[in-house]
Length: 139
Image 1 (cartoon, rainbow, N blue to C red):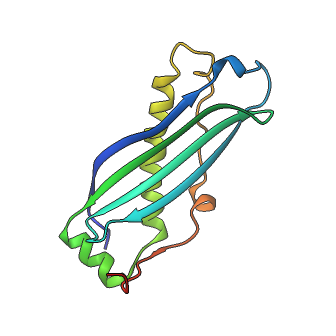
Image 2 (tube, rainbow, N blue to C red):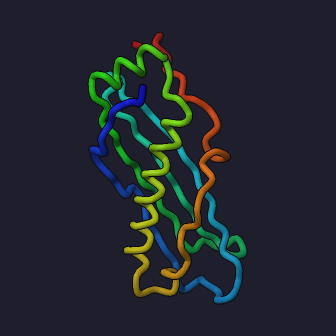
């Protein structure tokens, strides 16, 4: 059974860009990081995504976005019964956040030299490899 959820909140935690440091024609590297947390009552999953654009080890752009997903009672029971959030579900949430970040980056870089540098597709199978185990011993 899939975990029923809805997007509750999107929070741009950090956004900084340095368009003056771009050298046209040189390769730009994008690094991504993903993290997850679950509220104590299992009603909310947070996906934290950070993307960093560099060129020759010089920072061009960095952003960190937190998306909060509300889980209904059926989903909470599913999580509790399994004792984990399965990797496929985590990847699905990260897909939503990646698309959100792609839009944030596009909007915030409009009318700058960084705008043509689109966030490339991210292989979430490589980026997120494991289930998130729920530690039921914590009170």
